[in-house]
Image 1 (tube, rainbow, N blue to C red):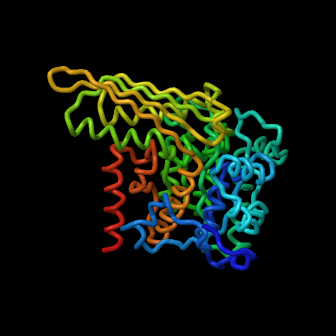
Image 2: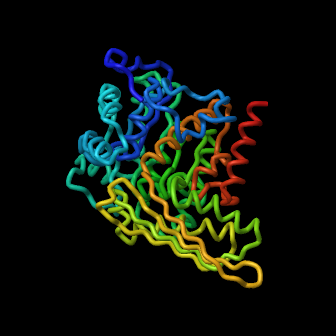
Image 3: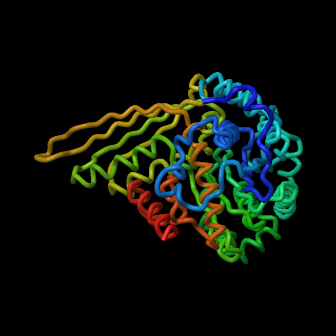
Length: 413
């Protein structure tokens, strides 16, 4: 839904004292959908379809309006945002009308993108920003200082009351044992490790920089982010809300909604096989076994938490021709009364960016609300958004959603 030419001239006036949304992976498909989505929501050009905070009872919370958002971010590549835009238009995800209507907002957003830090094990792309390589070679302390300076400059330049940082980068290479390492066991140990030159994943550096700057942090990827005990301690100490990990948008979402049905009906699930095909840059990254390992761990664990032990397996294959679309096929083999063996097959196809983008806006609004009411530490009420919630607990989507509604009811009195 778009407006006339006269109605869409110029960008919306920037709200002073608004809400900053700082996206890591700022030139990617999800960030691009967030950018155009926020512009469209603020001007009434698009409907809030897919936004949990737009429906009852969450819509009654005192959350930031869409017109309050000011966007910026980090990325390690220099490619023009128009490349992501043209791909999304070609795939039928962004409309030409919306792209034309929000061109001023998109140009302003692109002007606020700063170089990120290239992760140690990451391989540079042809359009890699040399400044990201330089930052990646710095000591962890220097990286943190430069990242915090970016956040401070963004906040001050636009007179923002708050800045929410969201990680949308590709999946990092899996590092076995990091979560149990002595270097992240507590904040004092991590501070010493930073001084000693210990090599942390980029997502941990981003999270440390954000939380240390007082910015709520959302880890929407399978990356480590703010999950180590040391960063949880820092968030509690500073009273900064944070949440994660790994946004639940497609196959895992329907698994966590459907699996409770089998448990509630006392049906014995024998096997649950899942097969995923995806294109785009994330698919290319996940073609590498070290990166795929981190993704599969979260996707494969949710069913065991709901159904107990059974045979399960998840596979991911990169299919370039799919572009930004994903297809998942699941086979469920289960046992009923008298030992009768039956099966269910589910085929799901969807656009990951269009599913994820509204959740990013939701989580930014919820993180901002938590900060406003003085909450710090893990945002347990956001578990329904993630495959691997920071606070653990059930993977049952319905139970998780009830927790979110209860949180809302508490604040609505």
